Image (cartoon, rainbow, N blue to C red; front, side, top):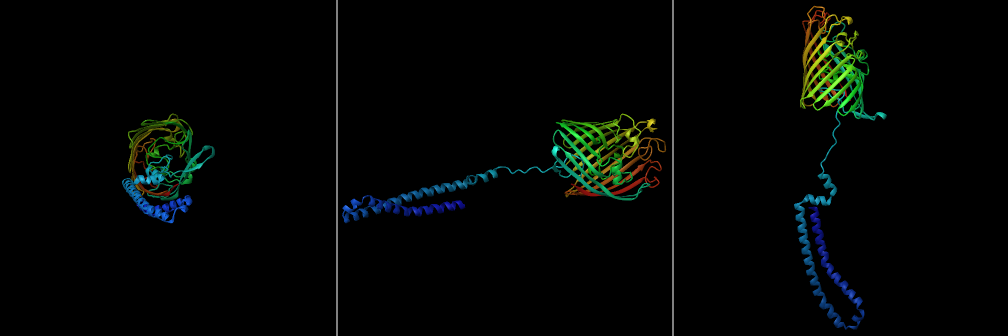
Length: 472
C-alpha cells in the first residue's frame, strides 16, 4: 500500500508539473523563433508583431492543455491497472521487488540434524552416552571422545562374613575413545570401574579394576567392509542379555543369570549383517583366561523394527585349571546358551531371555562332578516424561544336583535355586543422572553355609543402592 500511495502522489506531481511545462515550452519556442528571425521581426511593423503573438498563444495553450489531460487520463488508467495487479498477486510484486527475499521464502528452511550418541559402548536403557566430542588425532584423523564419572553407595541386610552393611565408592571414571568411520576403526575404553552384582559381596573399585580386567578393560581394532567387519582385541562378550558395566544396563547391579556368564573376551570376532539377519562368531579366551580355546556365536533375526529374536551359544573346546576372580574354574570350563527376545517401541523396552549352562565332569582339573543351571529373566524399562524412567528385573535360576551332596556348586549349593526382583527408578537431566536399585534375593534349597548372613544360613538378602554421575 505504501508503494501505491507513492505512485499516486508521484503521478499527481507529474501532472501539475506538466500543466506548467507547456507554457514554458511555448515561451521557449517563441524566444527561439524571435532569435532565429530577428531580421524579419525588425522589418515587420509593430502592429503586425503584436497581432501575431496575440493570435497564436491562447489556441496553442488550449490544445496543449487538452493533450496533457488525455495523457493524465492514460496514466490514471495505467495506475488503476497496476493496483489491480498488486492486489491480485502480492507475492509476485514482492518477488519482483526482492528476488533474494522471494527465493529464501520459497526454499524450505532446513536445519542440520542434531548429533547423535554413538553405538559404543553398547547401552540398553535408560542411559545413553553423551554427544561425542570430536578431536583431531593426527594420522588417525578425527576421533570421538565420551566418558562417564559416577559414584556409588549401598546398604544391605544379611551381609556375608568379611563384608560390611554399607559402602561408598567411585563407581566409574572412564573415557571412551573411538574412530567410527573408514575401513580401519578402533575403540578404547580406559579408567577405573566397579561391577556390582546381586548375591555377591562388595569389592572396592580399585581392587575390581586391578583384579578383573585392568585399567583398559576393552579395546579393539575394527576392519570394516560394507556390512562385514572384523574386530580384534579385548571385546565385550556375545553371551547374555546384560552388559558388563553398570551404566550400560537398566539396573545398577548385574543379575543372578549374569553371574554365570563371561564378560570380556580377548580374541577375534567376525560380524556380518544380511537383510534381517546379523551373525557374529568369536574365537576367544572365555573368562579372561588368556587361553584361546573358547568359541562363541550369535544369530539375531530382526522380525521388524520393534522385535528381535537372538540365539547365543558358546563354550570351552579345551580345558584349563586356572581359578581366579576373573577366571573361575567351573564357569571357564562350561558351555552356555541363551535365547533372547527383544521388544523396543515408544517408551517401552522389554527383554525376556532364557539361559542354560553346563559344566562337564573333568577330574584332571578338579571338577569331580558335572553340574548345570537353567534360568530365565525379564528386563523391562519404561520412560516417563521429564527424564524419569522405571526398570524392573524379575529372574529365577536353579542348579542341578542334590542338596547336601558333593556335586559341583554353581549357586547356593548343589540343587539350590535363586529368585531375585530388582526395581530401578532413574532420573536424567542433560548429562546428569541419578538412579537407585531396590533388590531382594531369595535362595531356595540352599546348603547351610552357602547362603547369606555371616554364618551363611540366611535365605534372603535385601539391598538398596544409589548411583549419581555425569555422562560427558
